[in-house]
Amino acid sequence: MKPTLVTGATGFVGWHVARALLERGDSVRALARDPVKLRELPGIAATQGDLRDAASLEHAVEGCAVVFHVAADYRLWTREPEEMYKSNVEGTRAMLEAARRAGVERFVYTSTVGCIGMDTPDGIGDERSEAFLSAMQGPYKRSKFLAEQVALEFARKGFPVVIVNPTAPVGDHDFKPTPTGKIVVDFVRGAIPAYVDTGLNVVDVRDVARGHLAACERGILGERYILGSENMTLQKILETLAGIVKRKAPTLQIPYAVAYAAGVASTAWAEVTGKEPRAPLDAVRMSRKRMWVRHDKAKRQLGYSPGPAAEALRRAVVWFQENGYC
Image (cartoon, rainbow, N blue to C red; front, side):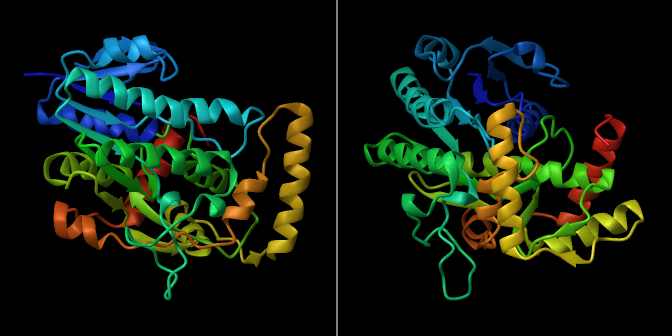
């Protein structure tokens, strides 16, 4: 059996993709800058490398039949945005090129819901909704948009690429944690006294992992598939978390102008200190638009059937509590 390469297995979604493959009995190889961080993945084969090191990518993909390229620099604030472009855009190009030269039979690229257009009559996006680089807020979303264009470019030239666009995954083993996981951690800590009027599509990370495998098996080459579940306002997310931890949800809604001012001040201070801002300005800007989508295409073509978001939020709370985050 030829191995399957997973990038990003030290991160949240990549860890779950790797685990799903291992549980299925696949031979899995993981590309990691620090293989020591490959935790709780018995049987995985580690290879050290970096998306900015083309030689390490060629070594990692040698002999592999399938690549799941999940790795990304996922931060809503950075003092060095050029590094994010090197990893997310040029790193994706280098990974695709290495896979093409190695004769990989299938390449699944993990994009993001941020690359889906939301300017639709009902405010709910899908794979047909057009998005533009000019509408992308911050270096993370812009770099992921450009990286998705690179993947589509390889697909147009005949390379067997399928793209998945996860929404806001939650669940266990969110090591960093991700920005969505940080909402869970901050709420459990009692650090969210108010909220803004925004919304996310929340999905169980395990369903996202299963969606990756389904896209590999049944996805149409060159197509994109949204992997999401429930469209929820931030208020609803906090109310769900409140029910899990048995405490009251915040009732104070902050006007966007106030949140924006806080984002400006917080981000300016971060530029001075080098410490991540409590309220990154790019995150505040993103909150002005509800990131709501539908996953009908994945359901129809991949057999994708996600479970309820509440159960994933509950599992996230338990995991964060048991691992000392809260």
